[in-house]
Image (cartoon, rainbow, N blue to C red; front, side, top):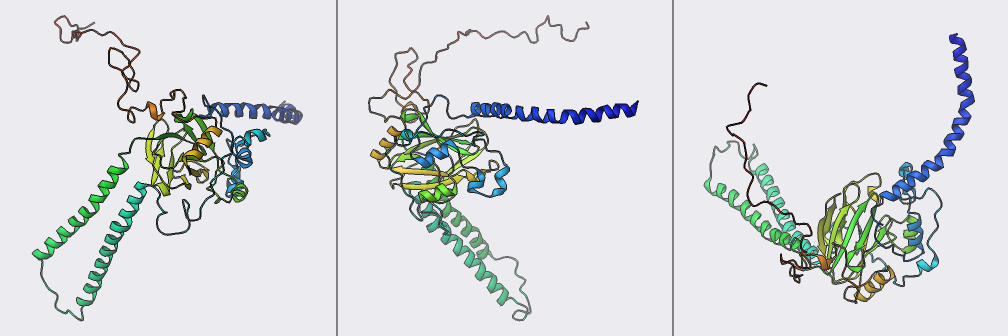
Length: 415
């Protein structure tokens, strides 16, 4: 009987294997489509915001099919699934969409805003960066060099002067008031010399002036999105370019992106930085700016530069398999070119007769940037930046009386 059952099992396995394989093959496209729809629903950037047109054919191709790891990095990462890579052939944007923008791209300048092999910091293009570079070069480095040389000289002097051949009878001195005062006061003076400019730098860094533009930066695995709440609340998606496309544009590999963050020259730019999945870190060395992007938290930083150009950065927080392929490119343009770029993305410039930005992230709606609002006529003295609450509950004016410790308490009585 057991032998007969074994024969039936073997026959069933042989007969059902082709059918199971064909069923799995038929179900695979349906599962792929369902997974693609679910991932599309998880994309945090596109809800309620108009899509922006790509600036050229390379951007259009990259937006339609972002570069896979094998085209920009080590082939060993090719097995990692790409959330953004389409499982089926996607239609690229039309030529009309590509040609909507007439803004020329800024070409990168060698040794400006990108690594060039130097041992020191990149050339700083913001007031905070220039102050930090001065503090490092004029205060810290001379102090470090002086302390290192002093310790080296003292060591050599002790080794030579108090060696056994030159000093057969060692001194038994245990206290020296002058030496003890010196080695106590000198470190204190050194710390004061470091603390004064350091505190001044921190105060300037965390006391930003009134913002002229707000950009919302969102980190995703593994790309960045930039929202412009002051300019119609449009958004651009920034993906890394493949080595081939980066070379075609004349940009450094693993730093070039299809869509850059664009800001006007001379404007104080406030960055609201967050994340849609894991912890990232947005930073541009030439701006002296680095801020973590944490899910569920809005971190804020700022920068201002008077030098047009193209400046690169990367993600500075380990965020997964493609952490090394989340480049950042910030393009600083004159005001007129920035306005043209905003128009090419379907946005509007403030003060051009457009309605007040509806986004709570907009600079005009910030109570910090606009501390004095116009009274809206409510009884509570609400303003445009601090509206009157819409849900007010009536509460009693007499506190409820607690019965704790009352004489009729039944606590401790047997049931």
